[in-house]
Structures are given as structure tokens and as C-alpha cells.
Image 1: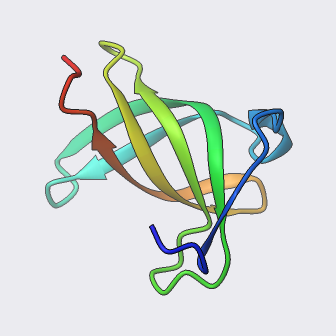
Image 2 (image 1 turned 90 degrees about the vertical axis):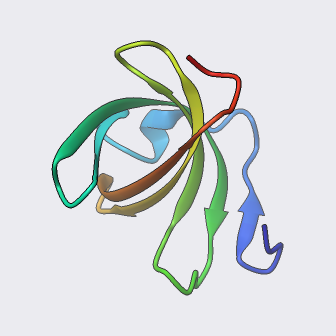
Length: 91
């Protein structure tokens, strides 16, 4: 993670300080797979990310509680795009 692009957020930052709804759907495989996730905690804020991401967050998959990290693009308190990487230790 490039320190010039991402800034660590304080642990006290509440999810509802950044987004209206902590649940979002990641769409993968050419729009064929929809997976629902919930944000546990925002960890970093991005500044001028070359791919347009605005935040990093710890997330859980709603269906089976697999944990992961999400790159998020948030506009006007709404998650517009997401890319989630699931932890290797998750179900």
C-alpha cells in the first residue's frame, strides 16, 4: 500500500460518518455474480488514487461471514464501486 495515496483513519471513525448504508454488493465475473458485504470498519482514506478508489475497509460477507478487505469508490456517501479480496483463512 502506497503511503502517499492512502492515509490511515483513526479507529474511532464510525462507518455512518462516511456512508449512509454499510452494506454493498460487489459484482464480479462480467456481472454474473453478486455478493453482499457489510463494512466492519474503514481503515484508510485515499487521495488521488490512480484507479479512483477513495477508501479501504475491513468487510464481512453477509451470507457466511467470510472476512476481507475492500477497495471502495464512495461518492456522496454512496458506495459506487467495490473490489473485495477475501482472506485466505475465511470460509
